[in-house]
Image 1 (tube, rainbow, N blue to C red):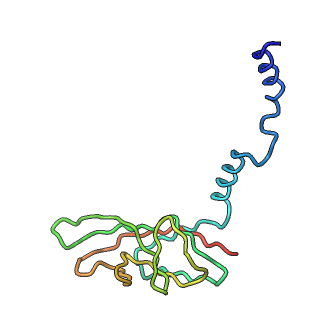
Image 2 (image 1 turned 90 degrees about the vertical axis):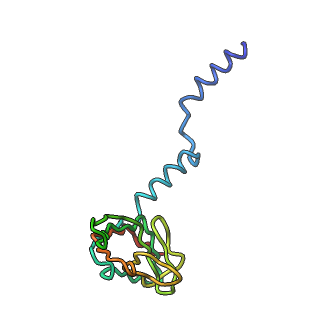
Image 3 (image 1 turned 60 degrees about the horizontal axis):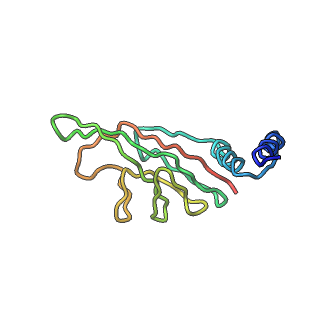
Length: 144
């Protein structure tokens, strides 16, 4: 037999066996997608007052934040100006995390900040006339 005939014969024999072996790269990618969709339930908290939101975790829990955002309005000018931005989730030991991040410790008490600067959690803009319209934080709590 010629080489090309041997190749076609092997191709015909081996084609039905594709996908029969576990642990290949495609299986790993599928498992990663499944883990994003499975696990703890996502929570979407929405409100108009930042101080209404706080979260306490036990020592065997950690926080995953998908999104933390605000929509507000500056009323200091003649024309009210609408703006939006990201919130910071501050843990009581003075570190913060934002959208798309994980808490680096287990447990803790968390609060929302409009912005976080020099270790200070600001829940409004100093000196500006700012009105919070709404904020949303999408998160889930993992237990180990």
